[in-house]
Each structure stands twice: as structure tokens, then as C-alpha cells.
View: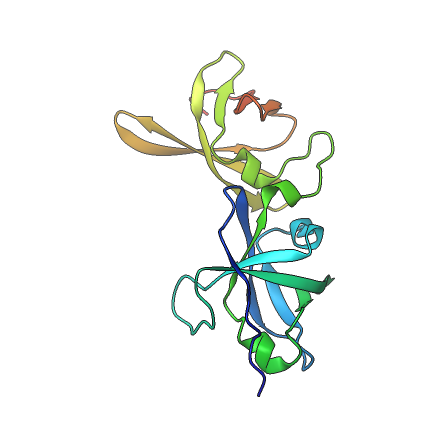
Length: 190
């Protein structure tokens, strides 16, 4: 029975983003299955060292804190990603990683094209309409079939409320990441 090699401990960088978790061993040669949190897991492929933290709840973990996991190979397989790390050479080693949360520094994400955004960059942005009326702040995004939907949180009458706006060019006029604001063609009574 193989054990997981000693992993180098580190601090989680301030720009670290949780991008997935290790689901289980995959095969007998140390590969493991990763469940990415994005339908386009390019951030997992963009760096050769992942930062791991133990599962948040339950499960037995073979490490504590934050550790570095050097990745030999990672690739798409069906609806998941499979990966192979240095020092993880058999099924037992891969199983010992089960449940680990995977982080990568935001700085290592691939560059986006024009009018492309990482969801993590939109969370927290203020949203205003064309008249400058505040509509709320982005609390999350939802994949709703062919489009993504912004979920905004705001207060009305002292009570927390939620508003949803499709993240499509018909409604979104401008995304200003530097100014931390999204301008939309939307009214408060929609």
C-alpha cells in the first residue's frame, strides 16, 4: 500500500480561487478524477502546481493546511478532468487525495478575450442601469441553459432582496472590471 508523499506546505495566496475538488482515484496508476467548478476548466490546465486544502466537511484527510501538489498531467475526460501528480503513483495514493479542494492563483488564469470574463471577477461588482440607478451587487452567477444569469443582492425596505439579469449583450452595456461596475439596460421594476 502506497502512501501520499510528503507535500510541501505553503500559505494560500490572497488571489487564490477555488476551482474544483478531487473526487476519487481514476485507474490504478495514480491518476485521480477532478470535479471542476467551471464548465471550461482552463485554470486547472494553466498551472503545473495546484494548491490543496482538505475537504471542508467529513472525510479523512492525509494532510492539513495548504499544500502544493505538482501536476505531471491534467486533461479533460468526459464531464470531468483527470490528473496525475508527482509522487502519486498508484491508486492508494490517488485515493488519499479524495475530497481535497483545489485552488490556483488568479494570476495564473489564462487571459480572456474581448467581452469574456471569469465569473470570479464579476462577483461583488456593483450593477447600475443606464440612468445610474443602483440595482444591487453580483452575488453569484447561474448557468441557465444557453446563457448565464447575474444574481444581484440588494436591500429594499430594510429587507434583503434578489434580482436576476441575463448576462447577454441585449441587457449588458458595459463591464468595467477596473471600476468594479456593470452597466445594464434594466429597470428596478423588472
